[in-house]
Image (cartoon, rainbow, N blue to C red):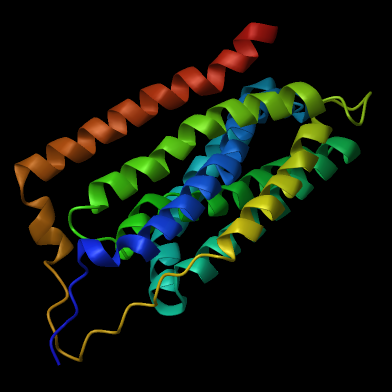
Length: 249
């Protein structure tokens, strides 16, 4: 049976999925802005050694890196929606742990909450690719762009949440904002329940599923692209992690 090729006439489902994923990117993505703004400040508030203040943010990034391959494999087996909902659950747990850490004065619990946020981030990175799963070739670039545009909205929502909720549990600072992360994940998960992306069929035994990773990395252009991404992300992380601390100290 020939494989079905998605055409522009089939993009009705794709546009629906794009709207849902753009919403998820805007709502769920705002917790990363909250983590970046408050991770170092909360760490400085709880850590006995101030050199460890930014460890929560580092933990988020590291856990995201190590769990991303597993997130991809899990979604390949159980589907995008199941994976994204699991990511939202991890984000909610991370927010709850971080809020409780501030209430109880536990730096270790704050780091554990940041690790859960890293699990969420590993799933969030696939939102843009999921947008292309049900799109025609002509609509795929637009689908990815619209989902990424949701990140611009999240960059507004996150700081506003910090502004209005950080002192909800005064005199304990920041706990209110992390508690709001739980609600953010619940709101995002509610939208993701409407996502409709078929689970991909398993390739036949012995079928070629793509080039080996070693062969891909033998291409100089790939190596250069990866190095540029590493350096740019490192510089971005340096600026975003240190700025909140520099502003208050």
